[in-house]
Amino acid sequence: MGGCRKQGRFFVQADLARTFQTLARVETETPGRAESPASRRYAITSNRGPIAKGISDFCRKAGCLLREEDFAALHARVEEPLNRDLSRRAGYKCGFWTQGPVMLENLNLLEGFDLKTMKHNSAEYVHTVVEAEKLGYADRDAYYGDPDFTPMPAALISKEYANLRRPLINPQRASAEHVPGDPVHMSVRAPEDFVRARFQHRNGEHQDTTCVNVIDQEGNLFSATPRRLDSCRHRRDTGIPLSSAHSNLS
Image 1: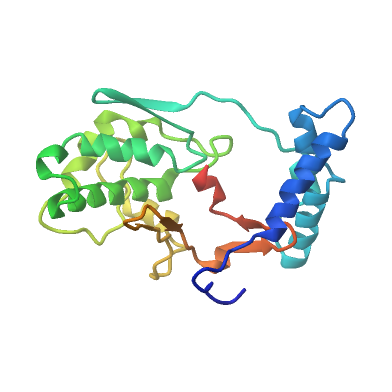
Image 2 (image 1 turned 135 degrees about the vertical axis):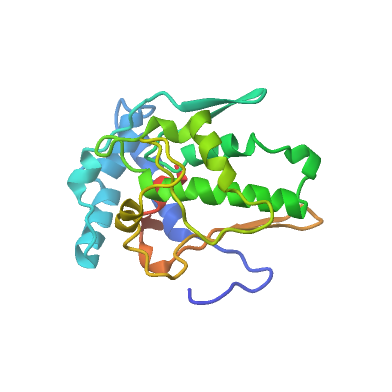
């Protein structure tokens, strides 16, 4: 804790290992339910489940909102994925309760460019992809949420909406704006009062995620996605981090 690992040292997540062992033990010790998903769910979600209770106790002390009842009421729901035809392929993503649909929106935007002619990872190619992603992520930040509580404009991932937004991509200049559109009224830019209301929590500092991926000549891969530490709490004896961003990674 508190420092970088020296070369040759292993990074061991003993707490997380114990959590996995708890799940495995519940499966084998629950008579008649060894192969049942319910036995795995019990260890996490039951009011008396050790994992749920540990996280809940931690949240009470830390001022977080999760309680045992939330885990007990949790259930997975099967739903149809969002999908769009992408040239000769089809793209499928989870719903707007994740950030998955932003990839469909970004790909719709990029369909208006000849990326193959630009050549992979050329300056023109990278510029075009990044500028398209800026538009998609601005819409994500402005609109995405839980569809059970917030209406989701289906036009966000439509070809027609992408056609409206695409001209905002300047091939000669990188945008410094965070510009959501208006998929409800099919407008290139959302009204200024709407944007101010949705982004009022931003204070001008960079508050987003940085992702670093490195592969060396021997095939070793390192991937890290650091986030602002104040958005994450860690229940140490479970090895499970709690973060408001985890739904985005689903």
